[in-house]
Length: 222
Image (cartoon, rainbow, N blue to C red):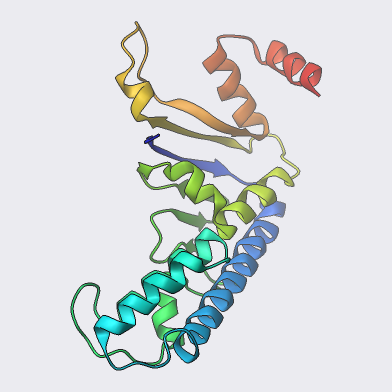
């Protein structure tokens, strides 16, 4: 069933956690880049067979994509990289995929990288101790973004943070069914994830309970 949705937010990271979160994003970005590049080269040297025909190139790419056993994130990015070689709907001459082609869709990162996502609909940014995330807005987009290895690495890293006083925050979002609901007070954005003391405070306020009561509720769930 179709479900257009999105989520976003900005968190305040503890200073001590910034390097670990950045490293998790960097490592995941580079592993994903390498996986996409390796598959692009495999297709060019195998199933696509270095054809010079853009028509045959696209036919073989479609067949390879449908039969791929790779993750959806890798397979989708491989498709975009390979399609870009012939001009996204035009009839350019197929050629060997290069690292620079993959960089447009699945860029590598380093210790100075502050923006992650490249050609993706989603994006992650780090500015000092601030981490911002946006999933993009599309059909099942929150689910699709969270399944990407870089976004998944972000959530794992955030869940491992030792949150300190004055840190944390929430991601919030909305979807087409919530927006279209007709009850009083309905249709507004809702919290999708809460982190640290700041997130707990926002979640408690959203639920209309005290922070103490919310924390008791959390301890009971554990």
